[in-house]
Image 1 (spheres, rainbow, N blue to C red):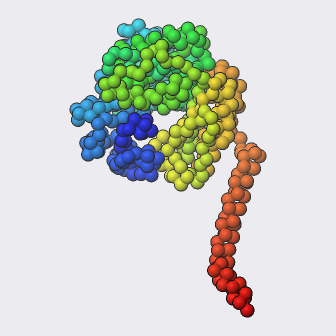
Image 2 (cartoon, helix red, strand yellow):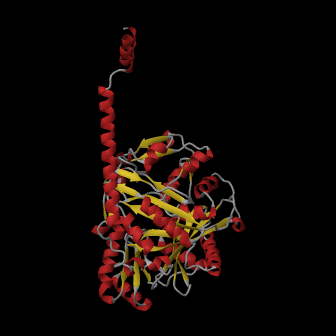
Image 3 (spheres, rainbow, N blue to C red):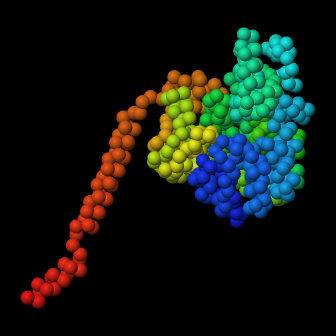
Length: 484
């Protein structure tokens, strides 16, 4: 919406009943309620959303990065209504959204893939046979999956059948499709992704990589760019393969090619996200390119604003995802009312969030409430700036992941850049959240004392206003006294 406002484009928001007071609703030029709080009664109702689009006479729909953002049927229905879909073609979404199809496409295009099956598993006998052929450990993955759903690590034969059943059950529940496949598990991998932009004229570029290896339950927690694991030579070849992967499906728009990279710099295609990524702001920060503006222009038929040799990397950027969850209680979601919020400011600091003082975080959606993005000239300075920004970020009323993120910034493995996707479990003891420290208690006490002082001050002012004689009466008394 900010990008639209800069481009002189009016924005229309849709919202569920529990999101009625959310920030995106307040910011939009128009906003329409599309149903009750549960997502299957609102944000997943394609027909309702399309009816609003027609009613509001919109020219285009941007799907964001959740719910229907990678739904080929939704993209197809939008096009059928004569509305622009700000994203790739339904064909590209279908091809890359199904993990098995994507693996087959990458192999055909010469892009390295993780060793594994080329088709869905049809029986448990086939499961045992293929696993023995590939060798332990293996990953069982949902073909229609994402976000860590329908995924199980299997270390030995004893875990295989139960993990297979759980992966199928979770995949069916999350995606309505229980198709699963297996692939070799890469030990100590780095999760590195390349941002892609492609226009309708056949031009495709990449905007460098993002390191996404700080993960919990296969969900990203901290991202940074450039990756401390990357070398110029590796960046060049992986960028070329990322472009090749996108071109294999005639991709148009913004997308992300995700790779697993081992400690010897061998890399393998993991999947493609056919949408804008949550962590796209760090790429915007080091390149100066507004990815959303590029998405809109591409959908409108315009050519890319940049050639590959014009994309230059400046400095270092880190993003921390702020969740309303309790790190001391197994990261349980912690919805509720925001009593106070004070966002960090200063050079190189950006916050993208939807909450404010008095806002009630609903129970129905992902507990991420904001993204904290920083930029600095060097990685060391970026870490120091992020620590300062996290220190300034104050939220009361709900528990948040801020203390956990502060610990990550101080962990030696993160500070020296020697980490992989096992970072959190390898540093579990170091990352344990202790009771609020003395300094935090002092901050809270000072804030409470300040509020008490302001309240007394306000009461005193009101008393003075009530009891103080009228200045006109006082003047009249003095004038009368002078007469006598």
